[in-house]
Image (cartoon, rainbow, N blue to C red):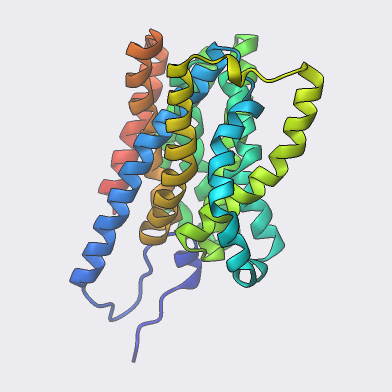
Length: 318
């Protein structure tokens, strides 16, 4: 009798349990290693993503213009593939299209960019990836049952770290506005993570869909911005700033991280990928110290410590 995995657990990115399950094979271990390598690369780029947004905010670069660097090169590069695989994309339900593009494309980018104009790197990089495991688990539980909450002690530890930041630092009006954007962005990315798993798109297909559709949405928005402001701020950037944004947004976030995160979700599952992503704030905060002189305060360090502990706890419990 062949073992039958539970589909609701697989959809949530959780290991399926069945009677007579076989021992993991060498191919399985290789797939796991590839997934963790892809996720590690993604985390480094995600940390750079927050650095890039903060750098843009410090030089008064509007998020809509920064989005041109993020989606312009990638959208043009992937446009032929969108046409070549149009039958594959047409088979994806419209609701998954919406969740994938909104959760990882232009809408998410603008939400995160607006938030970073009101809060430092450490707070943004803590709240968006930090609440990602919570939102992913809650959404997965709503769709597939409470099995997605099996790691609730670790999730509770992460929630405590987020609550520490909200309770002790959100009293400032500007920070509160930034925190609201960050939490909304995290919810959007969580929905994207689960939708990507359900759509069963290959990493290259996911990158194609996100980049090309986002570029199509951006062009009229950019034209409206140009008409309202009377020009663009991009040409006024220094050469070093422009190279930083091109490297991080166009190549790192626009091309590499979309592929690597899609690969991590395919190999490790949605919830494991989202939980490990909570380590991003530590990397981003360390980078922000020499680049922007943003020293994390005690509250931030406590919040990040709780979140990191929750991440390590969740992986040890597996």
